[in-house]
Length: 263
Image (cartoon, rainbow, N blue to C red; front, side, top):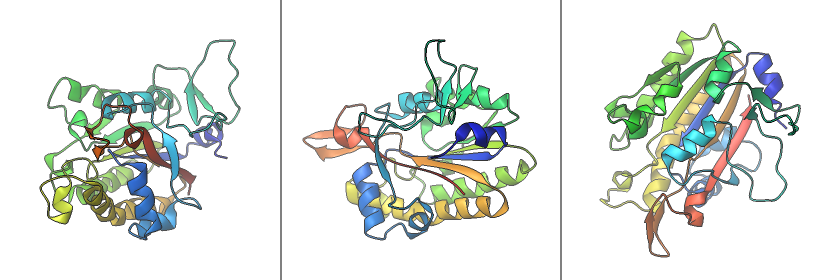
């Protein structure tokens, strides 16, 4: 069990990666078939957990994440949350949970000396629109470039290169480093030479991203201890039961891969 309260009191840096739109079934089959060997060697035993996302598309899912609501196990009993906003007086909180007395996790971490930095991927992090400013505004510092976005074949490489630069820049203090991986978001058909997006192309996008995400975790944890959280914000329907896209409560949208570890 991860004791986030102790981890944050110790000033341990945190890497939070969201694999945008990645379905659980795609992540699971890629793991089982050995298509993601770098992440496979780093994930906890058994690989990805299946969890339920709190939001069916990027904006509400990330707002929930940054408010303390990470994906939950698909079962009645839940483990202690990693972090939670200070609750009303009548509610008890597990001692392992980091309680932040602030409107969001990032503000709460700043009170413990953390610098929060976002390496955006999809356009909800781009500041190109009013909605594209909502999530970046939560951070002390945010970065987005066109080459970080999913139409770019090497988006994850560009994102990881930049994330490692940031980690080096703030190696002297606790860091909350957030990376929104866009490669698994549509469009990703180009990873298999197709113009349409499917489970096969998303799996190929994840296989592409694997080496770079493995590099990110390996380089970071070689120098100091990190809490690493990886999950999808939601899944994507590719014609399942006639449904396409996200923002719907279909199981392929609501079931997401999740992993958390201290390395």
